[in-house]
Image (cartoon, rainbow, N blue to C red):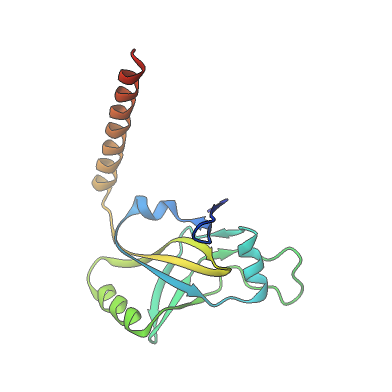
Length: 163
C-alpha cells in the first residue's frame, strides 16, 4: 500500500510503506528487523515511496530468508536495467535468528508477514511479524472492541467539554 512517508528525525527512521491489512488479518506474536538486498533502481523507487506490501510474505528457503510478492514499482528514470516489480528479495538477518524463525514457522498456523518497510540511516529495512491467522469471529471481536473504545473516548471528551 503506497502511503505518505512518515519521518522520525530523532531516530533517523522514515517509514516508506506499511501493511495495515496484516494487523487486521493476523495476531502478531513477535517482530523482527531485517535488511533488504536491493538493486540500484529498487532503492530509488523505495526512496520515492512506490512500494506495496499487500499480499506479501516472507519465507525461509535453503537457510535464507526471502521476501516474496512485495511490489516495488519500476523506477521512472530506469533504463533497460530496471528491476522486476515482484521479484523475490533476499532478507538479511543473523543465522541464529533465521534458524529460530524457521523453527517457529514449522509450528501450525504461523506465518511471517512484513509489517512495514522503512529507511533507517539510509538503509532499507523491513519489519517482519511472526503471525498467527485470525478467524472471522476474532476480526469481528476486534472491530467491536475498537468501536467500544471509540465510544468511551467520545463520552469522556463530551464530559470534559461540559456538555
